[in-house]
Length: 481
Image (tube, rainbow, N blue to C red; front, top):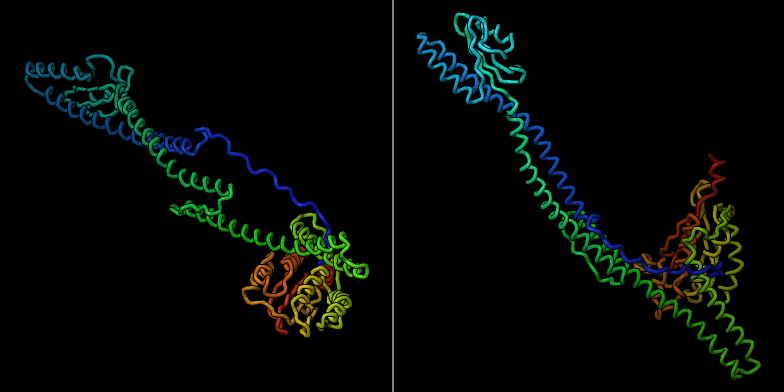
């Protein structure tokens, strides 16, 4: 293909450095343990916040019920009619209740026997009504149960709540809290080991891939995320192996192609240096050396162009192009070249212009490359066709450029890899005439950079057909809108 601008090949830098030394605080294990301990701690605290008030209320309710039963017993004892029997039994009951830290207040004629009871409680009991609930007794919060007796008398029992169930329940929290933290630590260690094991396996496999081991594979195991990671790494290893295999084959084929003209040039140069070639054969020898050097120059230019295709600074100068005129210009060059080897060349183009928006130099480079590939394989007498037509009825739809030939063509399997570097060269080397394997890859890359599409198929002439679709002129799109 025509000469390409040169550029320096990319320099491969040193490999990635070794991973930094890990600290336990930054590992997945440490974080999993901390998270599970925090979850256990929060669970215990939330449970305590919900359960402690319920437990306290239940305990106070039981204390209230028990105090009410003792108040009824005290009221029954004090209702005894015999004064001596009532006083003796009452004194014993009061002593027993006070041993249980229950204060007893006797109300006679509307007055309490000693201070401490709220006046409202005294008045309510003296009025013949019972009292039950929590009150301030002697300046402290207490459970109060009062029972009225006949004649304005009564009995009131009060139990302080300052050392009640709240303190007992809160003091009992340390054991479940400690158990929760221990369970969190154990669960965290187990979870971290379970999660970190496939990650460590994947890291080891990635390190082996980096070291060049393409046979490494990661076992696929649940859960789904770990299986996806294993599939991804295994696919990467397979893709790297395939890519490196193709690259190795490509380099072998390219080195063979480079060695062929170099061998010819070296042989003729040695012959000239040794004076083996006679004087009248020197011009022919010079032409042969020139032809081989031009072949070598095309190979190097194609390699450099392929290396630059994906670069952001790849030079392109797109503009309006008449594909009909481009086909006519190409015909003036290729008609004589094809006729020289007995290959008929024809152009199929409409009489009207076929507008497209592309780089005229680059698209001519693509056309010349496709025609050169066709001329290499077609036998004498088989045609080579350059066709141009609009991509649609709208002038802004772009245009199609097609190169067809009557050569051996491609199989369906060949069409799938036609634009891969060196693929067809590898298949047909030694079977039929082949090039370096770079031309079609370069043509596909150029068309892609120009915003077009290129496809390979079967030609009605019996050989291969390559169709390039180019975008339309955006100016025509704006004017038609």
